[in-house]
Image (tube, rainbow, N blue to C red; front, side, top):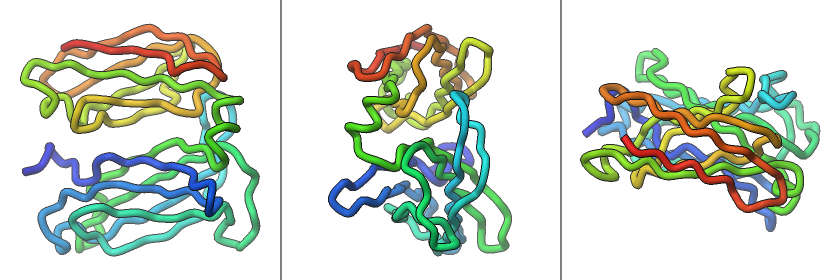
Length: 204
């Protein structure tokens, strides 16, 4: 069973301190390998508090297959040169067997230790409570909007309706949740580095 045209879910990234690499993961819910096609990974450098994409520093692809999917990035560009530690965006593009793009998902990540990330940036997290339970709250698009009205990060909620933004610059934001067939919800929140994650729970 699909959630609309969503095939890639639970897209995320974590830094493995032991291996000094970033692991980028997703779950592919396409019913067959033929339907899954292939998934392309691009890693982009970013700049500014709004995480504006700058350069594509790395790319890779793998054949699509139902189930868990993962990629590993060691911090080197496609040219083999080491890139600076810090924030990057991982974009996953899923194509069908004919090469047509059927989904794009991206996640902001911090290529360095959790300690360094929390020193420099904040986190915002919350839960979406929707009539019908956690299953209905899954795969809801959640945007982080700055005080200028710009979307600086977007994520999809988990199967339990949870979401989290990491590597957030200090400041005041709105968290906006949107899903077809439901009224849009917003919550104000303030993010501060070196502190517990700011909370923004919402009910539909």
